[in-house]
Structure formats: C-alpha cells, structure tokens
Length: 160
Image (cartoon, rainbow, N blue to C red; front, side, top):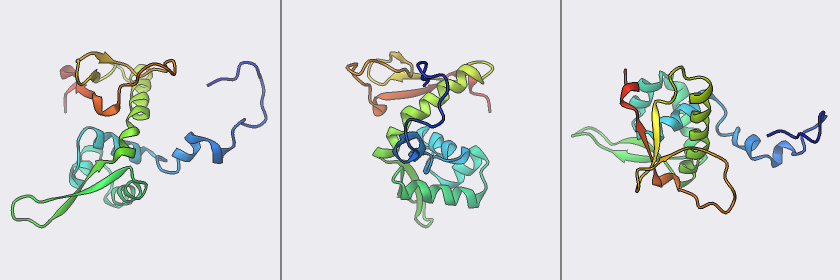
C-alpha cells in the first residue's frame, strides 16, 4: 500500500471515518479479539475452551465476546451437556465468517515473517482439495468463498 508517485505526504488521502481498516479497528482492536475470532474459525465454541486455549482472563473474554456479539461477528448458540443447565457457545455469523479472509491474510503474513518453521496449517478448497493461498487477484477472478475453504493443520506442527 505505497504511493510511489508521492514521496512525502502530510495527511492520509482517506479520512479515518471513511477508511474500512480504521472502522474495523473499532471492533477488531486488540490481540484478544483476533485470537477469539481465530478460535471460532477453528470451531471452538465454549467459553471455557476459549479461556483454556488462549489464556485470556475471564473479565476480558466476557467483554470481548459481548462486543463481538453486539457487532454481529459472533452469535450465541445454546447447548446442554447431559442434565446440566443450558449454556451458550459462540459461532461466527455471516458477517463474522467474512473476517476469515483478513484473518487468513494475517496468518499468512505471520507465517512468512515470524513463524520459525513456516505455516502450521494448509488452506485447501473444500470440494477439490486444491491447496490455496491468500493473494490480491484481478477483480474478474472468481472467488472461493470462506465456507468453501478448509483449514488443515499440518500434522508435524500439532504439538501441544
């Protein structure tokens, strides 16, 4: 995202209130929120599982889940285990699912520049099994929807 025709610029050409990235930071504003969405994409739904996986304090998790539900990124889903009381899990909404692309782009960047041994996952087309990558492509290129993508952990990276 460079502007090679202008060396120095005193102000951004797009005001904050018109910039999608700036607007998105109102919702996805911190590490915990991104990690919660990551967990939700991996299929984690239960409150205690979010806590255990990412080590988030209860008060922070409660606040971030509320914000993500209010922003319609996650929805609450009732469930019961045995004879216990009804509890609520969390799953991505349609809006939340569309966050999959920036999340995958962030993962790809981290895999390339920060992960010592590369990616711990493969991204594949759900119907064909073809390996995919996140990229900027010409506008007329057909999209593969996020629900048509499968995240496959590489077995050699699965050490907990």
